Length: 93
Length: 484
Image (cartoon, rainbow over all chains, first blue to last red; front, side):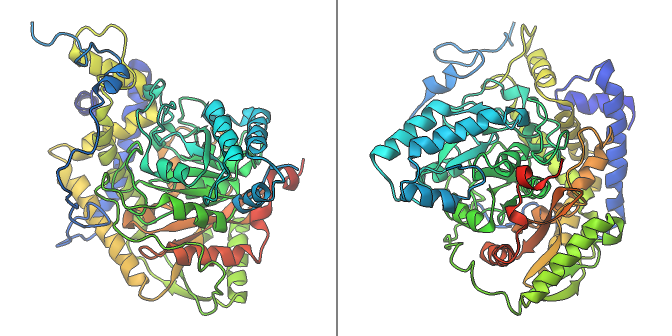
């Protein structure tokens, strides 16, 4: 786990590491990855991965309108909005 | 008459007999909250609405199961119009427009949510030291951690402020703090309780559950918390049994499994002694012990630290500063808005786990880590499946010892991760498990863990209740039972 890998995954995660925590976090990540590397020892040949303990197909439901349109409530509670939209810095110049 | 340290059952009787009014009970609860602010266990209080609800109940008495019972809710559950922070700066001003299904269920059963409890940030931690809102104090001693992540919930029950609290458990977050605070806590089968409105950490592991003074109270709470919810596709479509029905059935002939691979010789002698005494006690109740083998169990913690961060990195990508929660000041463009918001909003432990998750999910490493961990997860589940052909429940200590001091695990996150050694396997396999107090070490409580087969919460609660009607460990309280 070198600095370059860490800065790539930090960018993928949209996180910025600074001088203060960057080194410590890099060291921690290296230790954690070393720790989980013991999984290599398990014999998992022909073992199906288990993604969820239930292994059931998600249940479907009728496509009925069940909730009211609460646009105003949601927009009101957002960090920045106008009457119709969530606002973000201009994307298209 | 003091309400401190009373169980749900006791408070319900007091209300029914009119020894206390609903309003007095809630007023008394808030005065206990006021005298215990040093615990730092609440992030947000719900005083006005609680008093209002109590006054209503005085006017129109209710026969609902939890009518008038004050309850603390972990600050991970969305509560309509009541701030929900998840222990994070990211959500420091988040007011949910809806309540989690489990909160609705509890409130529909009559309970009064008096406040939101402090917790490790986004439930990532085992000591409550990662909360943006500061550490929670364990009522059993100065500078002792309450465990985590449901540390605030455990502390308020242990301090006798409320008889019950909600918690969530992804790798031990109900059972470990229950053990460290000397209370009872249950993580149900994955899917028993709807996850809708629970702020997600690791969706295939997260499960809500009750924390209370007794297994009997946990059973009463579980009765109300469970429901099939079409809003959560992983919610089980099972009828909810009456979990209190079998509590008093004797356990003669019960087969209890002891995991050969859990090497207790590495634990403190006193902890082993407490565990051995509990074994003897169960033998005296007619239970039999059988050695079982879970050959892959030693890989549980590394498996968890691939699966949980992977799911966390995906779940926490929703915190982008656009639709809700925190947004950084003056971003120069959209990308800076994302990066600055997330870097300011998340604490170091959350960042570490997001980074690990992004790493194990990235193209070159997916098979080596994420897929591999999911394969080992199946091996662990298979181990449990075989074990439950031989035994009814599996027993172990909940934790490696009692509550530790703040800062004592040092800077190494892996030391903290190993805190959940005994609790993580049940989450990986989706099995129900609980912790009940079973002794004291250095004047600090420790807990006994019982793991049950899929959907067998009733049996677990019965086994725990049998222990509690014949022992007093769950009756110990920090004020009465600590020296100095």
